[in-house]
Image 1: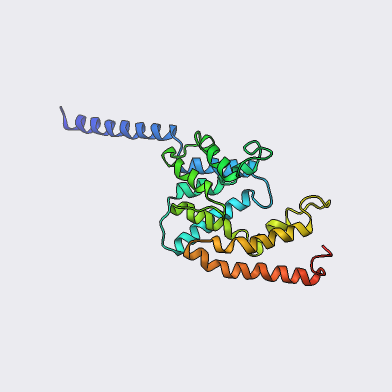
Image 2: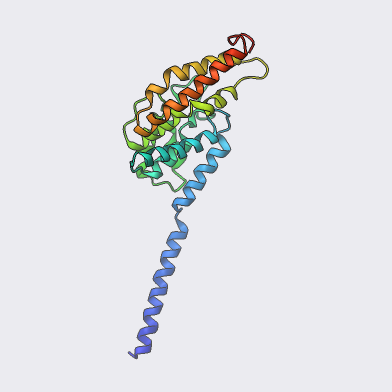
Length: 229
């Protein structure tokens, strides 16, 4: 065969291979695609001032920051999915009127949510585990679970912890009212700090705890020991 024909055949084969790969890739969701879908799902469904979409965003960012400070490598696929979906069962239709702990309900439901997104489903067990132990009173094991757990706990302290609880107060005097919100803040101050487990997370506890303590003291001083709330 003439040399030019061989060259033409080789170029044609290369083009066919490239086009075939592009066609396969075009038919499969990319990592970016599933993350866009999960983020959009959270934005549309998780609307609550204390544990809605913005809380998920903060948890993801803080968990990554804490792990980086501790020089701990995380599977970011697992962390991303767990961070954005960990409070799934705090919202209908996934949570009932009086469900079991929302961590367990969410862990059981998350596989169905992720199944059609393009998420690498071989990792869904790790996502379930991180969701199941994200609350401060649970005991996380894997790195992704530990750093989500600590980020979620720290989000109950400091100025952001105050903002979350105060945002829940019913302006019509329903539940929670001002005094109950104060009790929720006092409970967080008492229960959360000792449950943060990572070195970087522990380093953040002191400043955030002190900030919450200052707020409660000043609020007490300015409201006759909370009687005028």
